[in-house]
Length: 113
Length: 113
Image (cartoon, rainbow over all chains, first blue to last red; front, side, top):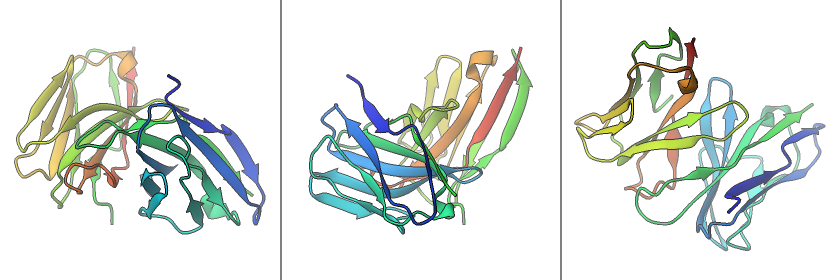
């Protein structure tokens, strides 16, 4: 199993550009989530999904859109990038059920100029 | 307001020394997790503690959950250079589903040879 994969690894955008960060998992996990990690801030939850067609907001959802059309994929869309969205983005997945382990992808480092 | 306060933020020690990292909150958590993150990678789960007063051991690492389920500690005995990394605690307040984890800012541990 590849686990949780994220593409691209690195990305540089100009302010106002749009892009989609890709996330896929091959563990048949129903739950998937997106976090951003900033220096001195820890990880903060952006959006999460408990299954295909179901998404919900986390702590910092503004400026980001998500959709979940399949169990495997959970893309994160930035419609109009801003410098404040410069961060490292992590996707994670886990099996449903209490206290199950959450598996993180390797991250995408995004810089918005 | 940071829900989970981790201390210390940075820790640099010599190989063979013992250390303790703390994770404190004024909120009660259903469970608390500890992760270790290496540069350029996503966090990897070390342990989940669920019951107040619970103690779990993972080789040289000892994890404790406070009686009131508001705080936790990670103790490393005889630290090794391979223990170097960012240690993150994360709390779940959703009854065990782990849908919305709240992360601390992390403790960056450097173990010098």
